[in-house]
Length: 126
Image (cartoon, rainbow, N blue to C red; front, side, top):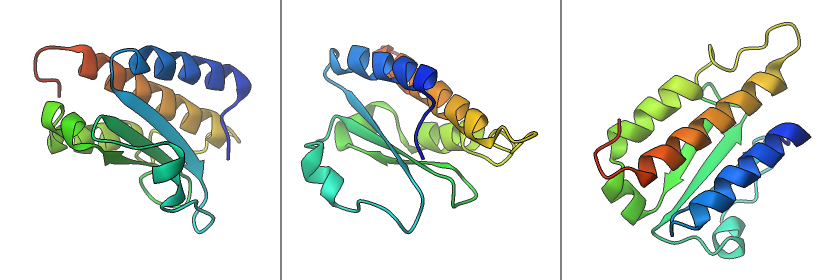
């Protein structure tokens, strides 16, 4: 599954602007069991300042996160649990009149904006 083109442009802008801070966000849209697995680690050169948001329509929580150590130090586990609960849950991404893809795109964008905003803050962000 892929983002709609308008949503993809917005997400690309968020990612490119966050990259300038030294933190990185990568988004993987997949449908289990068709996954790239560990291959993305080398392909994207993942490090301690990288977050991988995995959007997978197969599971109850559509959004999952693989978080680098430095990012986790700045944004502790409760932040990620809340983010997943707020944007990746079935109610946020439910299919309303055939709009499942659109609602998942919205969830991805909202989560990406929140990650971007919180990584830029000096204070704790929950």
